Image (cartoon, rainbow, N blue to C red; front, side, top):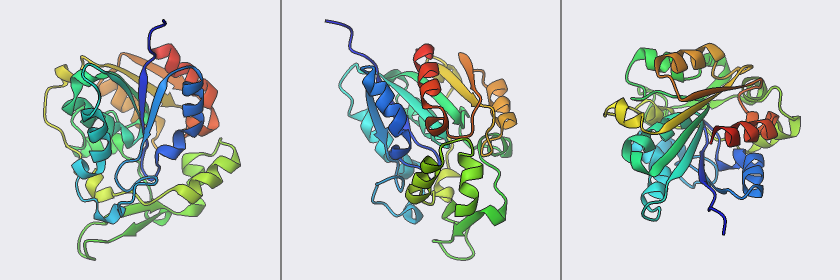
Length: 252
């Protein structure tokens, strides 16, 4: 009998859900890997209203619950996209011994989350007010509870090189993301502990959402085991799924 293949847990970014990985999941499962595409609170088909998600713990609960229920001794490969990188880091802080490898696809790779203005500058997309729609679920005087990309800016920001039908599918499935909860992502602990986990960063060269310079800044401040480069938009799982798959398998 051959060795059991790795178990991937794929963590979506802001506004997305587990659905965004459908092409990559097909490729990974077709090669014998196990794949779980998680929906974080208020994302994908998770029933939570994102305006009611007020803490990062609440946002990440589906991911942390999944890892906490893994069979004894099982390790997973965590892969995060965009803000999903923060969720991967959170899981590494909570369950470092259950994570075999962490892969950041144009993702926020910040060892302690969003503790400083510098962290936010590196790891969060910088979106002008005219491109977003904010909801003030906690009251007009409080910061917005959710933010969404306006429809007419989604393709250019997220998937300008992707097949148009994928951009249309995304526009139908995307949801506002719980921006006030995400802003509380802050973790305590030593990064030496986190450095026990192999980290791979996949840099997207034509990214209009998380600028390549932001990605470079995070790579420089906390160098991963390996940096791989893909000449795509922010959504290589749509624009270059086979290439993304090949890079991932090569990094194992």
